[in-house]
Image 1 (cartoon, protein in one colour):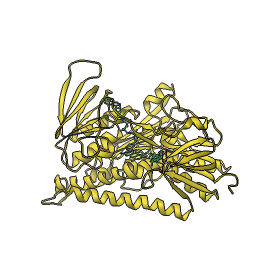
Image 2 (cartoon, helix red, strand yellow; image 1 turned 120 degrees about the horizontal axis):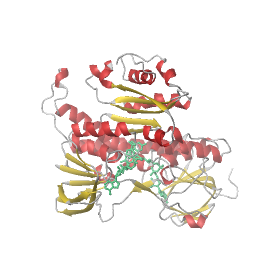
Image 3 (cartoon, protein in one colour; image 1 turned 120 degrees about the vertical axis):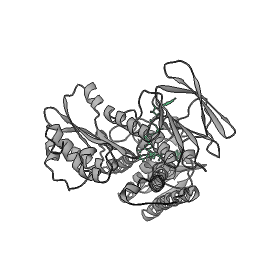
Image 4 (spheres, helix red, strand yellow; image 1 turned 90 degrees about the vertical axis):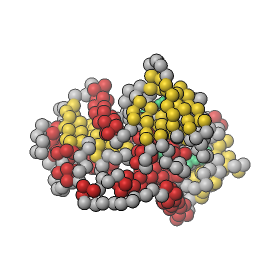
Length: 468
Ligand code: FAD
Ligand code: NAI
C-alpha cells in the first residue's frame, strides 16, 4: 500500500487510543507502525492507570471483607486475616504484565511495527523517532496525558512520601495517615485502596463537593457514603504547601476563600488534581499544528486536526479522559483514515468510579439539563427497596433516571451501587437506541437482580414504581 511513504499510518502512543487505532488500521489492510517510548505497550491505562488501580481495588476489598468482620453476619468467620502487601503488589504486576504482553502479541498478530522511542514531528507526514526519520501518509497523535503538577509541591515516586497516582499504586507500606489532595476519581479510588488496608484518609478538595462534573445528587450521596466509610473530608480547602520532613509530610491548608491556615501531618500525600495532555517534545510546530489554551490538540468529529494528514484521539484531545473513549476513537480514526465512516457518540460515554459502592453515569446530569433549559422528569429508586441488594446487605445507593418531560426519551442515568459499573452499560445501550423511560419500565428484568432497580427507577419517572 504505502509507496512514497514508509507506512500508511503511524500512531504515536500505544495507550488504549493508540494501540486500538493501530490494530484497527492493520485489520483494514493499512501498513501500520506505532511509536511508543515506554518499555511496555498499553499506555497509562495498562501500566499505571486503570489496570493496576483496579487490581488494588479488588485485592484491598478482599482484605477488607476478610479482616473487618463484615462477613460474620452471614455466618462466615475469618480469623487472623493478614495483609501481605508485597504479594498484593506482585499479583497486580502480574496482571499488568499479562495485559501489556497481550497487546504485544496482538501487534505481532496484526503485523504492526512497534517503533520503540520518542516521536517528534519533522513535517506533516514525517517524524523523527530517536534519530531515525519515519514517514507516513497519515499520523495519529495518541500521546495521552500525564499528572498535573500542584505548583510548589514536589512529587517523589521513588520512595518519597509525596506521590502522584503512579507512586500511590506502589506504596511499600500502608501509611498511617494518607492525605489526598483532590477529591476526584483518582483520590477516591486510591484513597479507598489505602483506607481499606488500614490508612486513615483525609481528602482535601478545593471545591465545596467531591467528584466535579457528576450529577449533584450523586455527589451528595457519595460524600455521605465515603464519610461513613471513615474518610475525613475537607471541602472548600486549598493546599498552600507540602513539606516532606523525613517520614512525615506537613500539608498546609487554608479555606479556599481565605482564612486561617492549618497544618495536617501525614505519612503519605497523594497529589491528584487532574491530568494534562502530553505534547511536550512532539514538535507540533514542525507539522503546522499548535495546542489550544488547555494544551490539547484540537480535532473535528472525524478526529482529524487542522492538518489533513494528522489526527488526534484520546486524552491528548478535548473530551473525557477515559480509556473507553480513547479506544472508541481509536477504532473510528482508523476507519476514517481507511475511507470508511468512523463515528463516536461523545454524548453517551459512560463514566465509572470503581469505589465501593461504584458510581456510574451516562448522559446528562440534572444540573446540565437545568442549564440548557430542558424540561425533564426524574425517577429515583433506592437500593434499600431492591430485594437482591437487601438480601446481600448491600443497600447503599440508588438509580436515578432523567427523561425528557415531553418525549420521555432518557437523557441521563446515574447509579450508585456495588454493581453500578456493569449496570450502566444497559442504559448506555438503550440510550444509543433512543430509549424512553417507558421502554425500560416495560422491559422484563430478571429477579432478583440489582438491575431491577433500573426498571423501577424508569417506572418512577412515570410515578409508578412497584416496590416503593
Ligand atoms: P495513554 O494511555 O496516556 O497512552 C499514551 C502513550 O503515549 C503513553 O504510553 C506514552 O508513553 C506514549 N507517548 C506519549 N508521547 C509520546 C511520544 N512523543 N513518542 C512516543 N510515545 C509517546 N480510565 C478509565 O476509563 N477507567 C479507569 O478505570 C481508569 N483508571 C485510571 C486510573 C489512574 C490511576 C489513571 C492515572 C488513569 C485512569 N484512567 C481510567 C484514565 C485512562 O488511563 C486514560 O484515559 C487513558 O489511558 C487514555 O488513553 P490514551 O491512549 O489517550 O493515552
Ligand atoms: P479529577 O479531575 O477527577 O479530580 C481532581 C480533583 O482535584 C477535582 O475535584 C478538583 O476540584 C480538585 N482540585 C484541583 N486543584 C486542586 C487543588 N489545588 N487543591 C485541592 N483540590 C484540587 O482528576 P484526577 O482524580 O486526578 O483524575 C484524572 C483523570 O483520570 C480523571 O478526570 C479521569 O478522567 C481519569 N481517571 C478515570 C478513572 C475512572 O474512570 N475510574 C479512574 C482514575 C482516573
